[in-house]
Amino acid sequence: MRLKQTLLVSLAFVFACRREFTQPPTNTTDTATQTTASATTSSTTTVADEPLPACYPPLPAGSATSLPAATISGNIPLYVPLPAGTHSPVQVRPSFDWFSWEEFIALNWPASTQGRGNPQSPNDPSVFKNAAAGTPTVWSTYKANWELFDQGNARPTDFDSYVTPVQATCGSGTVPDGAKKKTLVMTSKGNSVLNDGVQAFSFPLVDNTKEYVMYEVRYARQPYDFMRGSDNDPKSWLYLAKNLIPPAQVTMPPTQSIKSGVSKVDKLGSIMIKAAWRDMAAVPKDQWSRYYVVEAEVFDPSTQKCADTSVGLVGMHIVQKLDQFPEWVWSTFEQVDVLAANQQNTLLPECPANDPACQQNGFKNRPQSTNLDPNQSARVPVQALRVNAIPTTPAGASTVDANQAFQTALAGTPWANYQLVVTQWPLAANNPTQYKPPEQRGSYPCTSGLPFPVTGAVNLTMETYFQSANSGQGSGNSCMACHFGAAYTDFSWGLKRRPH
Image (tube, rainbow, N blue to C red):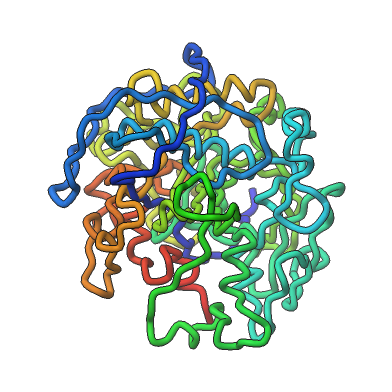
């Protein structure tokens, strides 16, 4: 098979978070009906919750909490429905997991053909449940990172435009509307929407079919407009490196909600997405309904030609900045067959039980080079293991329980075959004394908003090689640990590294 992409160092999109010391009371909705374990959900192991560092303030135990009911809506949630009173981080996990799932549904809602980033009939669940295979989603119409950072001396176009000043190698330079086949294009510099062949600060990932997993990064309207800046103020154009010198704290627009207890208006703010895709060519067609599959026009540098390629979504990071949580709320999802022993055609074969190193670090056969090998027969599939279990606490309302409830609600759609791996959030909500970036001698986790969980917030498709504390040395094995290195640019490695 062909080599799909040229080499580019992948931009990180992992996850950080912070907590509430004392949140304004908000009502939790009725508990969702809990179901027996879904056959599509990967097995997990119950583990004890990690002890919090000494810099985290003690909290009373609080009372039991429940998982809010699953709803199918194309409206992106603007706040986390925290229970009244003071609770431990584990006890408020159901509220954050509900937020993650509702956000996942709304972002994967069929996109309107009017503008970019808009849902089609967001209040009609049948639009989502009956969407045809490959229907463009809301987030897939967000601006790709190359539309902002790879336009050379040309000014990037406004958010709703599909035109790019730097013409595409593949396609016409514009993306067709939602009624036509979705096209992922390459720029003349060799950067496509699927423009990264290696994981963030790491190596490529070879799947079970000896194909490389491909990645893309996209920005919603608010962060894109913020980084693009105002037409009449060139100093606000943050896609130019000179406007980030000298370094200073950058703060993107947060989502605001009256119900958060912080704001007096309701307004959607900054959202950033990273997605992982697999080549579906070697996956039997009867398995395709288990994935969200689209047609992507991908450039093959070995043939210098573009080819239509069916790709399936296997991983998705979502990060949204909230007025409640200015260090963002971080959510990460996987397709359930990424590592599932009871399914054929998994993305990654499992670690051998008799290999201690693979069991400890969570991977084996990592490529030795960041260069993509055009010889498919020479590639070796990466074996993997989930070192950090999907959370099983609190009992009856854990992340595993949330997955079962939402998968049941989404039955009959490809989205029932996705699962939330973890939500990470900052505990020190709106407490500026708990935030100090590394440039001001801040350190993780004590001055990064007190993230929870502190470690182990990783995705098998995007942080395959950073699952253990040992393998995560240097950048950490959680979203926040990694992105704290870009705290000055509001936790965005794209804004920190991509401006030219």
